[in-house]
Length: 154
Image 1 (cartoon, rainbow, N blue to C red):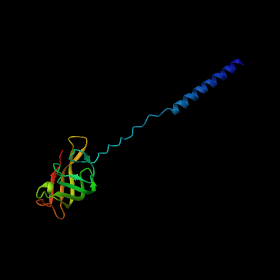
Image 2: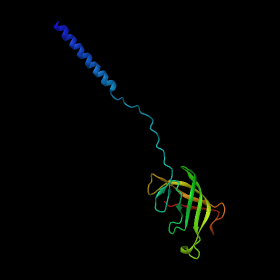
Image 3: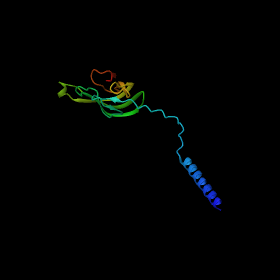
Image 4: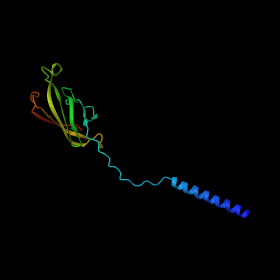
């Protein structure tokens, strides 16, 4: 009788150990399958202002950093992507008559185009537009061509 009780106890212990091992194995985390890593999305280029701040779709932008006598205001961007950006707005230009401090600002409707994105020297991982073209569809400041292109600072 003793051998049958001992045998039963041994079988029960073995069954319990097997159940514990099987349960632990099934509960163990499975190694993750190598999923295709998503390609990092490249951030859109930025427009760098006079104070070296990067911006995307700014509503205002100073063109004449030294004296502020020419600025873009009320910019509404129709697109901004990895190669170019386009906005409509107003170029506020001081006529500096008789001198800039006494001059008056005049508003000129303008189409702004940005292009030629390059790595920014201050932050090489970030690209910035390096060229701005202004197109004046109606009037324009005295001495300006209908289309004016500026290199942007780096």
